[in-house]
Length: 521
Image 1 (spheres, rainbow, N blue to C red):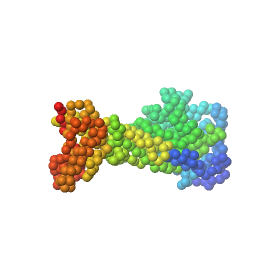
Image 2: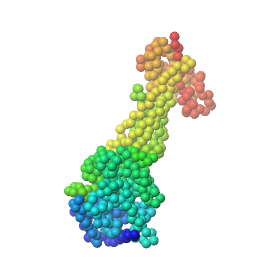
Image 3: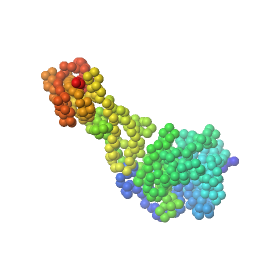
Image 4: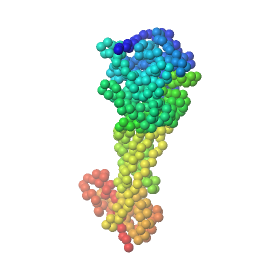
């Protein structure tokens, strides 16, 4: 059976009824939510009426909506069970600013006498998956049809895709951009409560199989509807009444990683309000459409276009020693996003910190590693509502035990800056462990032997090494070590570990060292 596809192209706008309560050209939610780092600017689209319009998808460079407002040559029927007019499918022209105009009936034959729901198309736009009710029931059923490429404008092979019984509804379908997975919402049994979002695999002949609930990172005991998949298939946007939000349906985003759904985040108060925000649709990376219900009638919606702008945000990561809570410089830090993409690979600075430009919607995995310490991994998602600078995140690393080996201490190196006798903060942590070791072993005595690199005059290096040995000795005494159990000596450049004509920075640092010799009575 063949059915006609009907949508008039680019006819001048004539006499479209406008909603008198929505004449402002721009609605900027950020004026009421200045702390939101993700800014949505909402504007009128030009097609909203006194009744309801909800955006649904694109087809042949047109934007499709469902509406219960009667348009030219369109029959509108009344739904007694819902006490409102049934929705029909309309297509609208889209200009370069994403303004819409002149809604016309999409298809006289796909539009039934009953309530029409959302629809979605394959990438080549030759297959449609659409929903409509049957009779006076409020439950939607899912259908599939094919566009006849030889007789352009005709639909054929209309088939109901049976997912659940007639007692339950299948709504808001969306086909991903690989044409291999269909997402939809349903209140069928076995979910978390209310309407849940499901996925189904698309077979080669267009039927569906392997229906799966998206799990509790997406679904709650309340309602989740209107899935939208980003063009790279990395994110799912959806509307939820159940996640923490601002009231009614809010728009959230989850990351799709290895067929799992993680990092579910609310898009923030710049978009979401106490009203219902549904049918979030991206037309470009930072532009799209959103449907929001009216104040006086929450069952009727208006379609807005939006643009997004994200403020800069800094995420500061501090790496500290586990027991002493002291910040550690020169810690290797690897930061990746939830998809495993490397954001940066660096070391903490002198203050034990790493700072990056972050996104409040991105989940970051931070791996910190330092010789003598256990590798630590943590995952964080910066808040969308914190202005500019996020909270400092402390990654705790556990120090290795200090053990005597052949009358030497197996210990992290004690670092000094070039030409200085001041102990670096990262080495202060190690020296505190030496104090603890002495307290735990009352018969132990330690000799502190300091060495320099070969840069500079030999006599000067000898004096510098003595200053470094004395600095180490003084630090241990100030932190509680018994001075009768400590001796110190400087060796200058007489015992180089790396005897090189032109040493690298690493080789010089290895030569600038303090060694601890053990004497146990």
